[in-house]
Image (tube, rainbow, N blue to C red):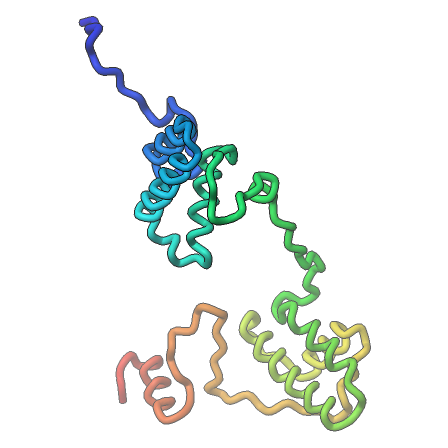
Length: 223
């Protein structure tokens, strides 16, 4: 059956021009286009204020931004293609500035020499290497070694000798940090448990409720 001459033609968004600011809808675009047809500049400006009020009601989250009134007027000019001739209370935005891309953020592409320790270990070693020899530097080396042992056991469930950690410190520092002779790390508790980031289930292995939590994991119930 052929459509009659008086039948209504349907238009779809895929058949019309893409909106510059889709959050305001196509009706606001039509309002902005009608502003250009107003010959009197004062009347055109008055209607522009009214359109901005409509935009504010359609996009209330703009109030969360600083200088939201200026943002709304900037959006008005962007919808109009930057050629709307009205008296704006704010400077008109420039398309070359609005459409400019931000400067790329430089990325640290230097490879991590020991992923199980992380990149920050290298920065800490740089700091320790700059410290003068003495008790403070030795204490920093010992604290770092204890932390590195903990990180090592998170990703490698086998035990690790102190000598292995000390060798990693000197290797990763390029020989700039020398582990003092006779340095020993504190012994690990037999109940110590290390989990990978995001895998901690909240069980406490020490403190007041440590015994309960260990028994719970072993037997599935409180003793």
